[in-house]
Amino acid sequence: MHSDKHNLDQLAGNVEERRLDGNAIGGLLREIFTMEMTAAESTCAGCGAINAVGRVMVYRDAPGTVVRCPECGQVLMRIVHGRGRYWVDMTGMRCLEFAEG
Ligand SMILES: [Zn+2]
Image 1 (cartoon, rainbow, N blue to C red):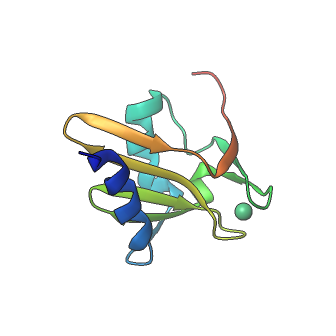
Image 2 (spheres, rainbow, N blue to C red):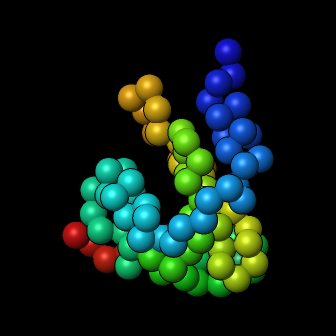
């Protein structure tokens, strides 16, 4: 059973469906990082652009969320939440910087 990997692959295929801004995942990220993350700054591993999480492009696609770089469109982060667990893929984000809470 490779359902974890499968969830992430499925997510990558449907990212154009619905686009939101980074504030849409403020609540979700708070559940994971336990602090306000919309002011956190992400560095794109693809183009090096630094963007506040509140300004990145977000695509909600149940059961997951895809976050993309507004400069080059690369996937920065993929988050799947289900069955009592979170899966966070941050392959496309070189760095995430935020103030201590
Ligand atoms: Zn980029």
